[in-house]
Image (cartoon, rainbow, N blue to C red; front, side):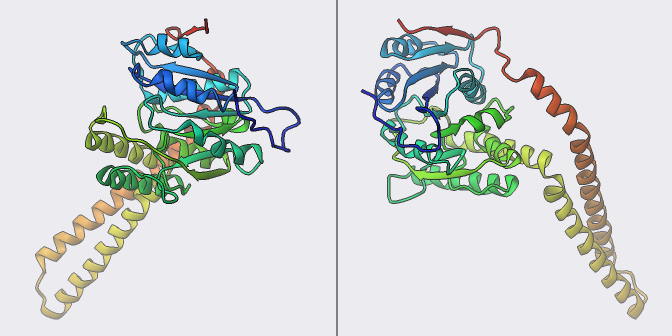
Length: 326
């Protein structure tokens, strides 16, 4: 039986809480995850990202509505489609959690409460708050590096940018504009949150790491970090390129002044320092030029991109199909 989460005084009606579970080849865990999740929400949907096992069938038998991608399209696409389904179903709160059993559905009330109380638009379940179980050491350090870069680039500070356990208000579902198709969608979301001016809260969650990771942690980290840097360069070009470029230019001018001082005293050219001056100044000017060009392009396409997003919002890929509950 679903637990009562309706203490909220902010909504004029009983809140509609939906859980979405993006997954790929999770036949071993998806059934129990769906059954446990149903205790805390009104309905559960599963976004099956092209599984080749019995994930979809088991999820449906467990009581979820299943939406399948015709092929594996990436975690980011699954997240975007989960958000889209939340809008379609007019959810007051959409909770997204993983289908591998890593997240504990008993934490759902903690994620939902700040939204129902009007305190946040998005609530992130953080693995780094409190004295609860944390990820293994090397994975933890890698996630902290990704979070640090994401925080710096997005201007939105959180403790766990890569968490897949989150809750979204109806406002967040409407305002979020995402485009990433891979695992970097969590980082992209911080950029989108900051752009939309959404309120964010974090709550501690329990995590369970069972078995070997499906992805190489190193490969995953490098891939996400590279995408974060791309997002950073596209959204904050003046910060990423302009400031380092300015620093290089200033360093070149300082070194150039030293070359002139040495020449004035000895009438001898310090060739090494002179070459260093030229290289530093050229590198600085190129970086500043790149920053200005990217900023100009960003401003140029902002209006066109916003219009395009409005036109394609809610578009459903032709290969996605829904499977109703039996």
